[in-house]
Image 1 (spheres, one colour):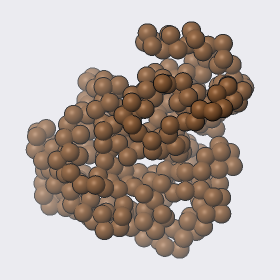
Image 2 (cartoon, one colour):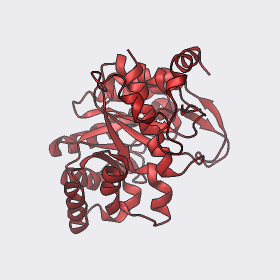
Image 3 (cartoon, helix red, strand yellow):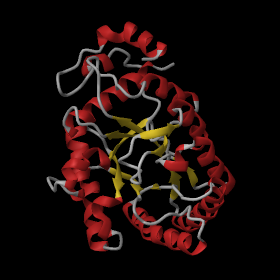
Image 4 (tube, one colour):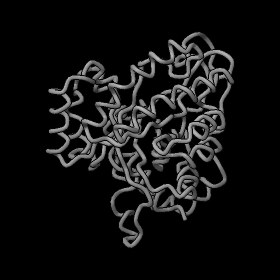
Length: 317
């Protein structure tokens, strides 16, 4: 636990009593400073409900209504994995758009996975990957989104992958610019979790519709074993340093949360410290809730993360 966090807990611990299982702080605490508003806007990432989605308890068409009616959030971030075969299905997309409009929900972002490696040093493979992303840019435009999020992993020598990433991101951004869509690169494992490396690509591409989506915890550069997502992390990047380095280019932020302590604070991330970094950068855009834990249900985890963002967002100077 950091010194800053201990100080914050000592000063606010008595105010952090929440409604058990729902809000870690309770609505009373938010009324303490009625004249002070959050410096950011809040959205809900679809991945926060990945268990319910993978188990077919709900589907993507349910997501806008759940965001608004269950969590009180009117802006959403989709993950293409949950409607992978629907990118060109205008009937389905129109249905999803109607659902969001019916609930007064803004579609803000589509996170794109499993469409190839746009950092591939092989020019043919890289171009194929870039073109695979086009349909999701088109879907994002149809749904009224502002952005798509891409992965920038890459295999091979670090500099070769970086140069390939500059080319791949630039090509995709040129296509997206015609649709008025932003392309956001996220720290999401491998080389992309090296914030300086990732920022250098965004800076080199130097396009108005290109930015970053800093995630609070995706800073593992190297893991044991062949499967990156299952192995033990053996090389990581400092998350606070990384977020600070990515914030100058940020067009969105992912607030990741796993487990919470008795006071409702995230055990992995010092949210107060992160929120101060974000505020100091001048950011005023969307911070997306991305709950991924097993300690509590997805519904409770989302509500706890929302309450934590509200409380720490109000607490930073």
